[in-house]
Length: 164
Image (cartoon, rainbow, N blue to C red):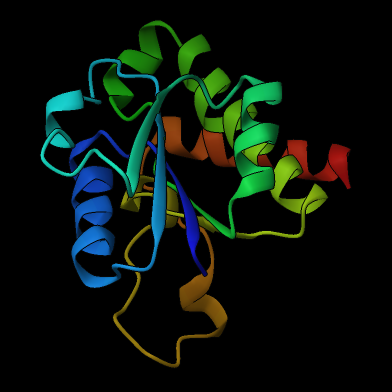
């Protein structure tokens, strides 16, 4: 794997993951796709941007952009998300767009080009998962922990049923 696309890579966790890959795998070229909203900050990447790390400011809902970037990647690590759940109760639309439509856009492109896709999220989506190298069964199921994460999970299931 020589080309990695990291979505949400200018956020705290995404930038630290990008830095880890940059420092641990000198053969890997990294493209970070980030919208640079309240959670993403170019300064989180400034010291590693250069020949091996490129920042593309854009939206994971932009299907032509996502298609172009995914076509050139060997794998996608998806961190991009609207994560301030309190705001979702007042204005759910940005959460639906990014967390559902954006994730779906990435999955569609990954499927089209047969790319590995890793979705990174929080306990709000996955619940408490035990640390285990051989995890299987019930501990791998979604277990949302709040009303909004349950709503998002339910919408994702509906989207999956409609799309498959």
